[in-house]
Amino acid sequence: MKWVPVISATGKPLMPCHAARARELVRRGRAVRRFRKLLDREDGATQPVACGIDPGSKWEGFTVKDAARTFLNIHADAITHVEDRLTARREMRRSRRFRKTPCRKPRFNRACVALPPSTKARWDWKLRLARFLATLYPISIFVVEDVKAKTRRGKRQWNKNFSVLEHGKTWFYAELCKTAPTILVSGHETKRLRDELGLRKTSCKSEETFWTHCVDSWVLAAYAVGGMAPDNTQIMRVAPLRFLRRVLHVRNPARGGVRKRRGGTMSLGFKRGTQVLHPRLGFCYVGGFMGNRISLHAMQDGRRLTRRARPEDLMKLTPCSWRVWMPGEKMKQGGKAAPTLTAQVEGLRAAATR
Image (cartoon, rainbow, N blue to C red; front, side):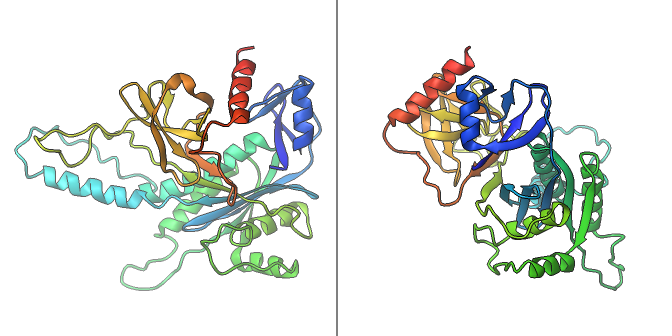
């Protein structure tokens, strides 16, 4: 990343600085090398910073910029697995009704909530990312593309009063306004702004480039703070992790009627999803465990790198619930021991123990 977020000693987000400047502050002892660099000063002047959000059904775009610089572009995956998991849970519950097994007394239906679980998960994921960015950058305003639900007439009179999309976005806007003022821009207005700046959007939504989703989020942010052309088209990919918090074993038993252990969120003292540094595998995250060994997974595609990592060899960076990687960047994973990476792990350990 060219621009590094900076946090004051009191936890206030300040204006990002150049990566070379951040390294110089660390060398002089004025800042701490963390995911959130802490300066020795408590306050500082900030400029208007906007965050543009382009919601989508499968992918979403986030851009943080001020009038002259683009600090961050995020191409995020949307949460789409909740509906399938709820269907599987409903089928399992229906099958249990016909078994001669003891059951508890029926209680209040907790599913009767304001938002369906799948809709709540989709919009809550957007809210989590927006709030996380607000802790790193001095965001003064959010600009969101206002998605519209299809309205059609029929026997059920399906319109905006019954659309889960309308309910979900209304909840999202109300929660987002608690962090910073929010401006809504319609989709056709976003296209008009993009055409005025001479920017083109690719038609292939699955491409991992700036011109798929982040171009719209950049235009939305520029609508609030200004900007004529994107100065930073590098994107960061973010994908949410799936945790099985209430699953104790696999669904189907193995031979002998024994169900294998599955689920949980802790692995030998590490919260699953925690980003760590391994001397040989590099930057990865924590998965499950077996015995006294931990499995590590790649950030880019989630594949398992090893299942025999020792906890004492890991340098814990930060707990996280999503995968982060740069498209096109070769990850130092799965190769032989790299002396520079091993030295980096030892240096981070020494800095953490000071």
